[in-house]
Length: 204
Image 1: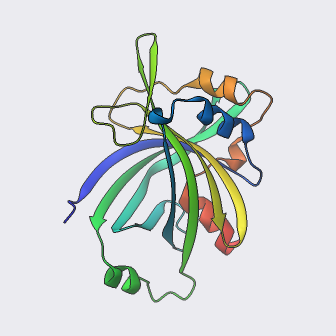
Image 2 (image 1 turned 120 degrees about the vertical axis):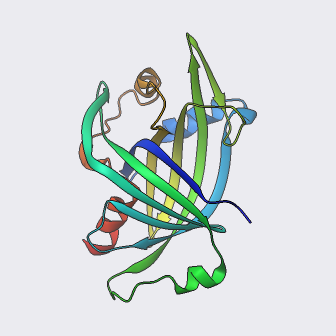
Protein backbone atom coordinates (compact mmCIF):
# COMPACT_ATOMS: atom_id res chain seq x y z
CA UNK A 1 0.00 0.00 0.00
CA UNK A 2 1.28 3.50 -0.80
CA UNK A 3 2.51 5.48 2.16
CA UNK A 4 1.07 8.68 3.59
CA UNK A 5 2.82 11.76 2.20
CA UNK A 6 3.12 15.29 3.58
CA UNK A 7 4.82 18.31 2.05
CA UNK A 8 4.50 22.06 1.53
CA UNK A 9 4.47 23.86 -1.79
CA UNK A 10 4.35 27.34 -3.22
CA UNK A 11 2.02 27.73 -6.18
CA UNK A 12 0.74 30.25 -8.70
CA UNK A 13 -1.93 29.40 -11.25
CA UNK A 14 -4.24 31.07 -13.75
CA UNK A 15 -7.58 29.82 -15.15
CA UNK A 16 -8.71 31.04 -18.56
CA UNK A 17 -11.76 30.30 -20.70
CA UNK A 18 -9.66 30.35 -23.86
CA UNK A 19 -6.72 28.18 -24.93
CA UNK A 20 -3.10 29.32 -24.76
CA UNK A 21 -1.75 27.85 -28.01
CA UNK A 22 1.73 29.30 -27.46
CA UNK A 23 2.02 27.21 -24.28
CA UNK A 24 1.20 24.00 -26.12
CA UNK A 25 3.62 24.89 -28.93
CA UNK A 26 6.38 25.58 -26.39
CA UNK A 27 6.01 22.13 -24.80
CA UNK A 28 6.08 20.50 -28.21
CA UNK A 29 9.46 22.12 -28.94
CA UNK A 30 10.96 20.22 -25.98
CA UNK A 31 12.46 16.74 -26.42
CA UNK A 32 9.71 14.19 -25.62
CA UNK A 33 11.80 12.79 -22.77
CA UNK A 34 11.92 16.16 -20.96
CA UNK A 35 8.23 16.53 -20.13
CA UNK A 36 5.19 14.49 -19.19
CA UNK A 37 1.97 14.26 -21.18
CA UNK A 38 -0.96 12.74 -19.33
CA UNK A 39 -4.74 12.57 -19.27
CA UNK A 40 -6.72 11.76 -16.15
CA UNK A 41 -9.92 12.58 -14.27
CA UNK A 42 -9.68 13.84 -10.70
CA UNK A 43 -12.72 13.99 -8.43
CA UNK A 44 -12.89 17.13 -6.28
CA UNK A 45 -15.03 17.49 -3.18
CA UNK A 46 -16.09 21.14 -3.27
CA UNK A 47 -16.88 22.51 0.18
CA UNK A 48 -19.10 25.61 0.37
CA UNK A 49 -17.19 28.71 1.47
CA UNK A 50 -13.82 26.94 1.72
CA UNK A 51 -11.51 28.21 -0.98
CA UNK A 52 -8.60 27.51 1.38
CA UNK A 53 -9.23 23.76 1.56
CA UNK A 54 -8.99 21.25 -1.25
CA UNK A 55 -10.14 17.61 -1.20
CA UNK A 56 -9.30 15.50 -4.25
CA UNK A 57 -9.48 11.86 -5.23
CA UNK A 58 -6.74 11.08 -7.73
CA UNK A 59 -6.61 7.51 -8.97
CA UNK A 60 -6.08 5.50 -5.76
CA UNK A 61 -5.14 8.45 -3.56
CA UNK A 62 -7.03 10.88 -1.37
CA UNK A 63 -5.26 14.26 -1.35
CA UNK A 64 -5.95 17.09 1.08
CA UNK A 65 -4.46 20.57 0.77
CA UNK A 66 -4.78 23.55 3.09
CA UNK A 67 -3.74 27.08 2.20
CA UNK A 68 -1.39 28.72 4.66
CA UNK A 69 -2.19 32.42 5.01
CA UNK A 70 -3.69 34.60 2.29
CA UNK A 71 -2.68 34.66 -1.34
CA UNK A 72 -0.37 37.47 -2.43
CA UNK A 73 -0.70 39.22 -5.79
CA UNK A 74 2.72 39.83 -7.33
CA UNK A 75 4.13 40.85 -10.69
CA UNK A 76 6.07 37.78 -11.73
CA UNK A 77 7.14 39.17 -15.11
CA UNK A 78 6.12 42.24 -17.15
CA UNK A 79 2.39 41.96 -17.86
CA UNK A 80 2.09 38.79 -15.75
CA UNK A 81 0.53 39.19 -12.30
CA UNK A 82 -0.31 36.13 -10.25
CA UNK A 83 -1.48 35.28 -6.74
CA UNK A 84 1.24 33.34 -4.93
CA UNK A 85 -0.08 30.80 -2.45
CA UNK A 86 1.48 28.46 0.10
CA UNK A 87 -0.13 25.07 0.63
CA UNK A 88 0.34 22.14 2.97
CA UNK A 89 -0.56 18.85 1.26
CA UNK A 90 -1.37 15.43 2.66
CA UNK A 91 -1.82 12.28 0.58
CA UNK A 92 -3.44 9.03 1.75
CA UNK A 93 -4.07 5.64 0.18
CA UNK A 94 -7.72 5.43 -0.83
CA UNK A 95 -10.24 2.87 -2.04
CA UNK A 96 -13.52 2.81 -3.92
CA UNK A 97 -15.38 2.44 -0.61
CA UNK A 98 -13.76 5.56 0.83
CA UNK A 99 -14.33 7.51 -2.38
CA UNK A 100 -18.02 6.55 -2.38
CA UNK A 101 -18.66 7.30 1.29
CA UNK A 102 -16.72 10.51 1.90
CA UNK A 103 -19.44 13.05 1.15
CA UNK A 104 -20.52 15.25 4.07
CA UNK A 105 -24.20 15.60 4.85
CA UNK A 106 -24.26 19.27 3.80
CA UNK A 107 -26.46 19.21 0.69
CA UNK A 108 -24.47 22.05 -0.87
CA UNK A 109 -21.27 19.97 -0.91
CA UNK A 110 -20.77 18.36 -4.29
CA UNK A 111 -18.35 16.10 -6.12
CA UNK A 112 -16.98 17.57 -9.34
CA UNK A 113 -15.13 15.38 -11.86
CA UNK A 114 -12.41 17.34 -13.67
CA UNK A 115 -10.90 15.88 -16.81
CA UNK A 116 -7.31 17.08 -17.23
CA UNK A 117 -5.09 16.84 -20.28
CA UNK A 118 -1.74 17.97 -18.94
CA UNK A 119 1.63 18.95 -20.31
CA UNK A 120 4.11 19.36 -17.47
CA UNK A 121 7.86 19.68 -16.97
CA UNK A 122 10.16 20.33 -14.03
CA UNK A 123 12.44 23.29 -14.71
CA UNK A 124 15.74 23.00 -12.87
CA UNK A 125 18.23 25.87 -12.86
CA UNK A 126 21.84 25.41 -11.78
CA UNK A 127 23.97 28.50 -12.23
CA UNK A 128 23.38 29.60 -15.80
CA UNK A 129 22.19 26.17 -16.97
CA UNK A 130 18.49 25.30 -17.26
CA UNK A 131 17.31 21.74 -17.75
CA UNK A 132 13.85 20.22 -18.19
CA UNK A 133 12.72 16.92 -16.68
CA UNK A 134 9.57 14.78 -16.77
CA UNK A 135 7.60 14.24 -13.58
CA UNK A 136 9.04 11.73 -11.16
CA UNK A 137 12.66 11.87 -12.31
CA UNK A 138 14.81 10.96 -9.27
CA UNK A 139 16.82 13.87 -7.91
CA UNK A 140 15.13 16.54 -10.03
CA UNK A 141 14.20 19.61 -7.98
CA UNK A 142 12.85 22.81 -9.41
CA UNK A 143 9.69 24.53 -10.59
CA UNK A 144 6.94 22.30 -11.95
CA UNK A 145 5.45 24.12 -14.94
CA UNK A 146 2.22 22.92 -16.52
CA UNK A 147 -0.36 23.74 -19.15
CA UNK A 148 -3.61 21.85 -18.76
CA UNK A 149 -6.82 21.67 -20.76
CA UNK A 150 -9.82 21.08 -18.49
CA UNK A 151 -13.36 19.87 -18.88
CA UNK A 152 -15.42 20.77 -15.83
CA UNK A 153 -19.21 20.96 -15.44
CA UNK A 154 -19.70 20.89 -19.19
CA UNK A 155 -17.27 23.76 -19.88
CA UNK A 156 -13.79 23.94 -21.37
CA UNK A 157 -11.14 25.76 -19.34
CA UNK A 158 -7.38 26.13 -19.54
CA UNK A 159 -4.91 26.53 -16.71
CA UNK A 160 -1.28 27.56 -16.62
CA UNK A 161 0.50 26.93 -13.35
CA UNK A 162 3.76 26.66 -11.46
CA UNK A 163 4.48 24.73 -8.29
CA UNK A 164 7.68 24.45 -6.26
CA UNK A 165 8.88 23.02 -2.92
CA UNK A 166 8.23 25.64 -0.26
CA UNK A 167 11.28 24.59 1.77
CA UNK A 168 13.76 25.23 -1.05
CA UNK A 169 15.20 28.42 -2.49
CA UNK A 170 13.55 28.54 -5.91
CA UNK A 171 13.62 31.30 -8.51
CA UNK A 172 10.55 31.42 -10.72
CA UNK A 173 11.33 31.34 -14.47
CA UNK A 174 10.11 34.89 -15.16
CA UNK A 175 12.13 35.15 -18.37
CA UNK A 176 10.60 31.97 -19.73
CA UNK A 177 7.09 33.25 -19.01
CA UNK A 178 7.83 36.57 -20.70
CA UNK A 179 9.17 34.84 -23.81
CA UNK A 180 6.42 32.24 -23.88
CA UNK A 181 3.51 34.60 -23.33
CA UNK A 182 4.65 37.63 -25.31
CA UNK A 183 1.56 39.68 -26.12
CA UNK A 184 -0.58 37.80 -23.59
CA UNK A 185 -1.78 39.16 -20.29
CA UNK A 186 -2.16 37.10 -17.12
CA UNK A 187 -3.82 39.06 -14.34
CA UNK A 188 -4.60 38.64 -10.65
CA UNK A 189 -8.41 38.14 -11.06
CA UNK A 190 -7.79 34.94 -13.06
CA UNK A 191 -5.10 33.69 -10.65
CA UNK A 192 -6.21 31.24 -7.95
CA UNK A 193 -5.94 27.64 -6.81
CA UNK A 194 -8.26 24.80 -7.78
CA UNK A 195 -10.39 25.11 -4.60
CA UNK A 196 -11.27 28.75 -5.33
CA UNK A 197 -11.82 28.09 -9.04
CA UNK A 198 -14.25 25.27 -8.29
CA UNK A 199 -15.99 27.39 -5.65
CA UNK A 200 -16.75 29.92 -8.36
CA UNK A 201 -17.87 27.26 -10.81
CA UNK A 202 -20.21 25.52 -8.38
CA UNK A 203 -21.57 28.23 -6.05
CA UNK A 204 -21.47 31.48 -8.04
